[in-house]
Each structure stands twice: as structure tokens, then as C-alpha cells.
Image (tube, rainbow, N blue to C red):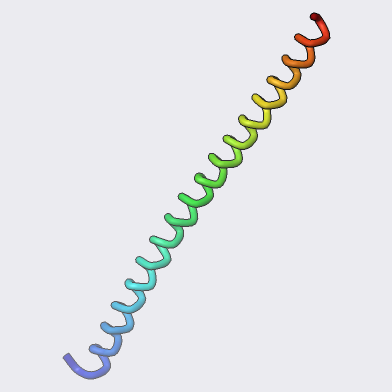
Length: 64
């Protein structure tokens, strides 16, 4: 291999490394987003059940 083609090969190798890093990062970001969404849904679910419990408690105390 001549010096120039060796350089091109190295550059290509580095690019593929970067591409794999970026790919892994994007997968991580997607996982984080879905995790965040799950947490938000859980919070929302908790808030809804709490509100329902309070509402049920109020209606029960009124009907007594």
C-alpha cells in the first residue's frame, strides 16, 4: 500500500468508528426518550388514581 491509500484507509476506519459511536448514541437517546415517556405516563397514572381516590373519598363523606 502506498502512503496515500493508507491514509484514505485510516480515514475510512475512523469514519466507521464515528458512525458506530453516533449509532450507539442515537439508540441510547431513543431508550432515554421511551424511559422518560414511561415515567411521565406513570406519574400521570399516579396523579389520576390519586385524584380519583380523593374524589371517591369526598363523595363517600358527602353521602354519609
